Image (tube, rainbow, N blue to C red):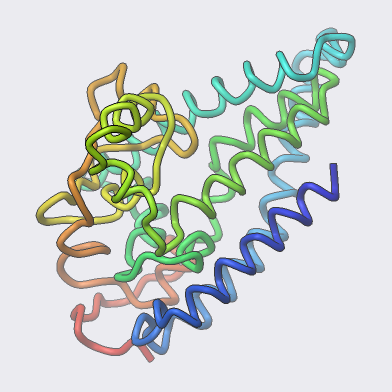
Length: 272
């Protein structure tokens, strides 16, 4: 399984280099973005595995009789079921985070907004996350469940699928625009977008203005739940703008909220 993870990491690195060579990162960053992304990567490596481990231990303590219950099951069937469950849980937590934006205490949104504050769509945006988001990361609940039930390979497969698909949907290269607009293949591709998340669907989720809809397309791999619950938006092109409209939080708050709180800075200002 490790070789597949290495393949995904290598593919992500290749996409990153190609984006740079194509000039897709030129002028994309402010001063504060470097420590923000570095801190987020560190948090991902530390807090993410710890959270998953603690949740796995919690399952064992609360329901010891179910430990290894699916050890003899077909791992591909478990993978499929676990992916559906993971996407379902992620859909609702992700949706609630966005709908929490206008609440009196928008804690969930402020933990998630960091991922949306980047004003350019590229591979690096995958790693722009508040470190405490990993404490409530929905996938940790279901991946830990897979491990608890005796299917670590299926759980690892779901992690692999999420990582690979995130690289595809965050990448700046938009191969899907031409496919969607093609007179012969376009209708079939649009039908497929009712089940699977394309780059266009996720770019729309990160945008605002024309063809931007941060309140739509909450899935990571599957758009099935968006389709079923009425939040699917299939775009015609790229959003007018990426990011969050209006002032943005200081990079230290974006990384460490709610521990760190700073006055917001204007969108055009550099964050020092």
